[in-house]
Length: 353
Ligand code: ATP
Ligand code: MG
Image (cartoon, rainbow, N blue to C red; front, side, top):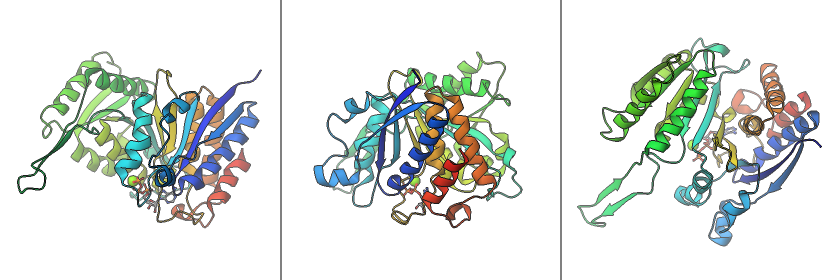
């Protein structure tokens, strides 16, 4: 019997609904080629669900998802529903309940695309951002005091646990070890954040002792972002807290021509729960419904999903097709300087497979 995977599919809002079908089309084609069977179960959880039910997903949503091999997500969030509801009602609970503590975001300049940075060639931009995905700065701890008075005080607490810090660092160190450059850069801000970042730095230094084969460095987030734009070729594996990793993983793809090609893998490395794969971009309400959204970020996320599930062959097949479509500038969408529709680009990649 061949391999079989059960995938939960949440298209979500806006262009999420337009790019997910292209990802599924590509997955079906690649699965057919490799004799793998895939079953997709759709969940229409979105801001529309929120409008009709008052919830982004049903109360047993997490339990339903827990039975799948992986989750394939478009984007959630739409004008009319506050971000804290769309995020804290669906995305963040999934990341946290399923212990998807690694957010892995590869950044690569493809042949055929122009970097907005001068004189950059494809090999110059090729790195990973490893973002801590469940703790750190993104917490609901804090609040407001003396509300409504001139003395209002708001506090927002960050949480860095030793387990949480060490496990994300370990993932990043191992990833760096698996790469040719063997270079790990840690994003910090220990001159401004009094407790959390010196702690983060100390855990990096402690772990570096176990990885003498790696070049390990750290920079404050301000100069880090400046360097990333000035000399992206310097970077190989970047590790950062939830907030810093978030910022760097938008900046990275922006240096490769368009954020729309960037994928995001929310990984539970121990595989005790399903992991979740999505494009980096959001629901892009400004272009929703126009059939011009670029599906490459979603397709690349699909490739990462197959790699996580153990099918390196399916990953490679999908990525070769993506590389060829971009290199030969077949049916590219507007954000990549073409005129094709979402479906035409999805079809071009599918045909190459
Ligand atoms: P979120 O808050 O969910 O991150 P956002 O409002 O910040 O969403 P994004 O969806 O991340 O916006 O995208 C920013 C802009 O980039 C969009 O408004 C859109 O113009 C463009 N964009 C994003 N994704 C794509 C895509 N797949 N194809 C083409 N353009 C895109
Ligand atoms: Mg955004």
